[in-house]
Length: 128
Image (spheres, helix red, strand yellow):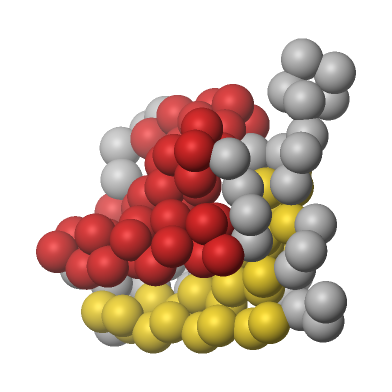
């Protein structure tokens, strides 16, 4: 199966987080992830929304890659320095703690301005 790309652009406002969570959960089902993994993707999408919306003034762009082996979410980030102004100290540490717990991989590429979240099909968290 070739990878499918889905892009979402929503205002960086809290009332649009649900739209992102719902699309992420639906694409996790399309990718063949388990029920528990779908819930993990939903939580990861929420944290990604919070993280990236703190760096975006207007809109938030997320690119989903659906593959037979994984679901990847790439959140476009704005100016990372804006984080300190938008959220209290420690808020992003919490987001990173959640992402580490519910994803198979996540990374923040400050040079490219992207937060990447990956959930793989069939990964046993105990062995990962």
